[in-house]
Length: 388
Image 1 (cartoon, rainbow, N blue to C red):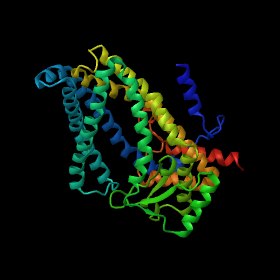
Image 2: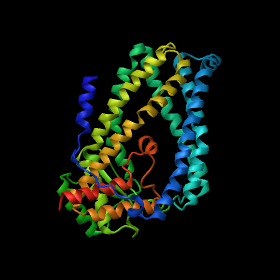
Image 3: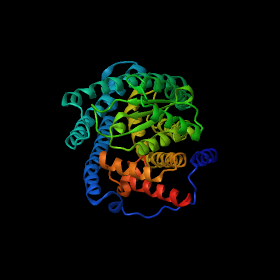
Image 4: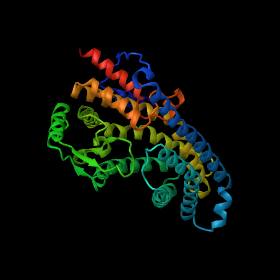
């Protein structure tokens, strides 16, 4: 526990001054009363949907946990194969109960002009997700159940090492796959501005790519991923369609480069270990009271435990993410020295993406992995006052 607390305290540190005082701004004065009302109405649908979908998933898992032993007995398979089949069934049931909520979310976004995909794509694309989920479930359960067969209740220790190794490998490899279908920055002046930001933030020369998204959504976004040679910044082309000024787009790039400069990807993997390893240990403990994962009937209980643990740790995971996003904003402000562009960008996000600039407390804690737009504007104002 002491080691965990020490590691967490070290990872918690950022370049944002600990004693920074944010001004108290009024969301309606900053964004406009009509914009705030529109964002609040739009997000309220997703908030209610999340509550119902979460309760439905937990109920389905409870039913599967109770009926798991009877289902396993009916299979007539060995422990590992029975556990895999049971896990695939649980994953499929979870996919099925969440499918209507996903379609409802797409309908709501499409109704408000955010989602641009056809109904054919909306209805049929989740089936590809089911195939991916099934494949991953088979692979993960095969490994975990074999470890449980070999190490009994101690399976979570080698499993943790494997998961951390996979996390590093995926962060190294996935950015190369993300580049498929993208293109380099074509504007010489924009590319020159990016190079100046890279020099100011001392991040070397990560790949910067533009992602075609106009046929799918009107929302604007950018993200940074990768470690080592695969580090990259990906900018949706919806950021470059004229709704945002060149200064605002430059701030976005500065923000994403800030993630790379502060090694947030590596820190995210570290936090994944700090949170994920105890969850694996908890799964081993809880299922151990029902015979352990050597008994395939305990597989639904493992799914339920993981789901409940992820729900319980959501406030911490979101708080960490919000803290790193705030630090990336700080890095972008320091690199661009343009708080007006930051303020304009966050106002633009609220308008184009129909964001609620000042969500309710429980929404902020459980669902928001970015600082709310009002807090981001307040931080930009605080930076401005500190750097006059």
